[in-house]
Image: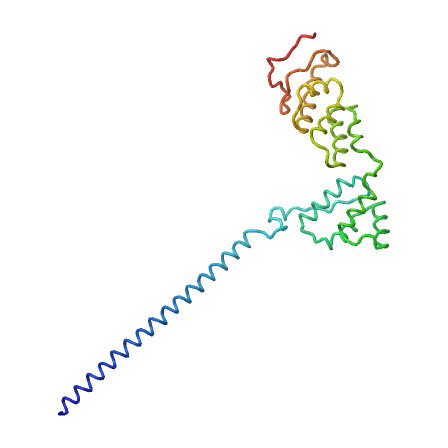
Length: 261
């Protein structure tokens, strides 16, 4: 074999090795490229997920935290002097819920907003270790300042009678109504209608309002009509067509009986 053949053989061998090397290198690069692309894609998905989560947290306030408009409102802690316990408890609970106040902090806040006999009772109860938590305080304050077991609020509701305007009677009725729970709406409607003056009571008994709110509105509407027509007061004519609470007008004026019996 002469030198030319040897050189050609070496060249062929080098070319083959070079081709194999290029193939191996390309395969390795392709493999690494796929791995890099896969890793980058996974990281991008994780970043997108975190960004979406942060955006949701920014757009949605945490539970118990009011939105910026409501947060700008200045709400004061309601004070309590021992009267109107039901109203005060409702307001203070709403205040604490609005501000997401922890129960552990509620007694301290209340301590700064009591007056008169309520403040004196609270100081005595705290000094004697009787108010260990907010639920305990709620129960204790109800026993101290709420209706006693001898107060028959339901009975008072059933015996309440209108002596002034419907608005005054409704206010008295609602004051008593707010002191009790568990009385059905039909029974409350019956109590309210029974306590009205005779002329109004007859109208509502005839038309039978289905809800207490409608009974309130209907009574005020009939009272306004009677005030506009003084001659109809104390008359013996029967019930008229129902009134519209919004405009004090008759819903069906064609059925009005304008002639006394």
